[in-house]
Structure formats: C-alpha cells, structure tokens
Image (cartoon, rainbow, N blue to C red; front, side, top):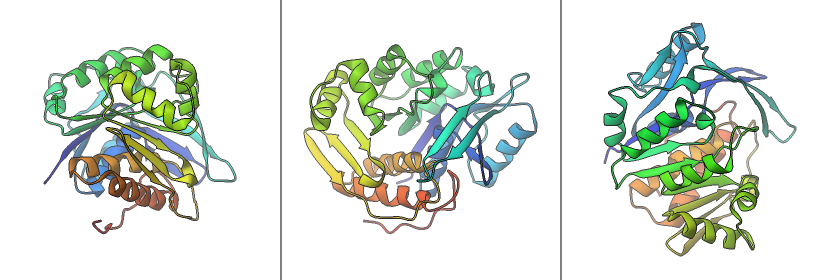
Length: 291
C-alpha cells in the first residue's frame, strides 16, 4: 500500500561544521518516510529569501511536494547552528523569530492532514504563537484512525509542562530519547524504573505506543502491554543529526504495514544506524531489505 504521511512543524537549515544541510525533525521525517516508500509532504513555512528558495528547490529535487510550504514575507528562513561533540552527538543553537514560528492555518492544510495515515509533530515548533495554535488545530483535523506521532525533541528552553501535556493528549504515539525521559518523569511525576515510567506515561495519556531511543543501546517499544527491546549494533558514527527522525519514519511505516513490534523496532534501528554513518540529517537511503 502507498501510505500518506506528513511532517508538521519546523523546516530549516542545519549549519553543520561540514556545511549546510536541510533539517528540522518534521522535514527529516517526511524525507525518510518517502525514501521508505510513503507519499509524504511537509507542512511548514520558510522566508522569502535565498535560503527559503533553496529549501523549496531541495524539496522538489527530493520528490517532496511544496504546496503546503508557506512563504513568509518578512521573517527569515529558520537556521540552526550545530556543533558536534567527539562522539558525534550534536549541540544545537536554534535561532528564534523565524518563518516557521509563524506557521498559519491555510485553507488547504486541514484537508491535507485529514488525508494522512500518519502525522509527526514535535514541541519545538510550538514554542510560540501563531505556530502553536496552528499545529494544534491541524492535529484536530486528523482522522481518528491516523497515527499522531509526538517526537518530543526537547531543545534548549523551548518547551514547558503545558506544551508537553497538551501535545501528549493530541498524540497516540510518543517518541523520546534517554535524555528526555527523565525530563518527562520530573515534569509529569512518573515514578520507578524506565519501564515503569513508560507504562505510567502510556496509561496516563492513553497512548497506543511509547518509544524510547537509547543511542548506541538501541530502543525500547511498549504497546498494549507488550515490549520490544532492540539492543542495536555497532556503527561508525559520522554524526547523529536526523537519526532519530529516520527512526520515527521507519516506526511509522512499520506500524502502517502492520508489522510485529520486534520487527518494527529492529528495522527502525537499522535505518537510524545508516543515517548515523553518514553526514547530515538527509543522506541518500539504500534499499532496505524487507524483514
């Protein structure tokens, strides 16, 4: 089947030591979902500037529709300064008051969301209005059976307990990493070990699936009382930018295809490892073998 997926939120340029790379978690998600066989698109906003024009050209070259990319007449295209630690982990300086902070509710966007089988969104693009209200209104337009994936991406100080709780109630899946789960535990009063915290999170917000990524330690999925723990495999890391977004895309595709939880987890780790082994968030993707 040809699944229809949407990345909703920020699109930007990651200013990496090796050069400029297309980025933003929703845009990365859409790119990887397309590489894995989906019909995908991004709903976001760029500036009326050279960087914005280059994003539109890049999306078209990647085969991603640009009809839902808005162009802001005054705010600049989003950029993020990225430095890499010795282990390849990125450090972000996310610039403020940019075009995707002004995401508007256009007439065509709710219809696009209503046709989606899966929508991925995060907390970063909700850091201010009007983007926050637009994202929430669009998620309300999703059909009941669609996967609504909250990929937390807790960056700098651009989140709050209110934003997180509201987002969790709009989602039916949440994905976080091993540095974000302790933040959730503190903000939401989750107790016990990792698995207990995940169970509480799932129960408290009625989530159909909770995903914890753990870097080189692999990932843990929890759905309907079942667990899937994949320890991952060694990889030579160039950088980890976009690896989590690739994981989210593979997770979505596996769920849409009705694959077993363990298969989804293993395949998502395989896709994420490939991205870690290349520079930038959107490297060319090989043809992954079907499980």
